[in-house]
Each structure stands twice: as C-alpha cells, then as structure tokens.
Length: 146
Image (cartoon, one colour):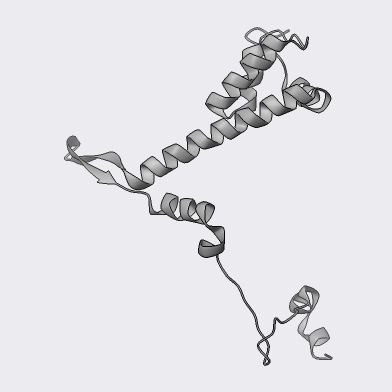
C-alpha cells in the first residue's frame, strides 16, 4: 500500500456506523466520513445498499448537514458578513455585505409555488399549448411543411 494512504478495514460495525454518521453530519462529505472509519467510498455505498440501519443513518446525517448549510445561508442572507476594505495595500476598515442570491434561494426553497420561475404558454383560447420540441429544433425546411 502506498505511503500516506490509510489501510481500509471493511468490517461493518456499529461503532463505524456511528462515527461515519457523526462525520457526515458535520461535514456533508462522504469522503471525509469514509476516511474517519478507514473504508473506501465503494465500501460505504455497498454498506448503504446492504444495511438498512446504515442507509437510514446516512440519510439522517445528510439531513443534519443540509440543515447546517441552510442555517449558514440564512445567516449570510439576513445578518450579512464582513469583508475587509483595503486602500493603498492596507486594510482600512470593513464593510458588511448581504447575499441577495442566498435570499432568493431561501425564498424559493421556503415557498416554491410562490417564488419559482413561471413559464406559461397559452393558445388563442387561453389554454396551454403543446409544443413538440423536435419541431423547434428541426431544420427550417422540415418546419415549412407543417
């Protein structure tokens, strides 16, 4: 085995499940969770397929990781973040910035029916129009015959 690479021990244990889930919930990164218990990604995905308790633990850990990301996105959107201001190569202060993009994503996630992009194509009678995608991308000569 090359130097610097951890040995892999693919024995399935409750302890490994617990450590894997803890690291996955903190980082959201499967690779780091695998490294924490000395298994490969292939082994982790095999365990997920073969062991229902591992699959559930994995799913719950990812929910926790996503929740932490959502909390940070909300904080950056609402409270902002400081960015240094430089003049003449020296830091002279800070400015607070907010993320409009994160705000948009949070609104879309919170109420997708209200904040999603809408594309409505209606016919003369006000009803929806069915468009054949193939016709849209066909050469002009083929479309002229319709």
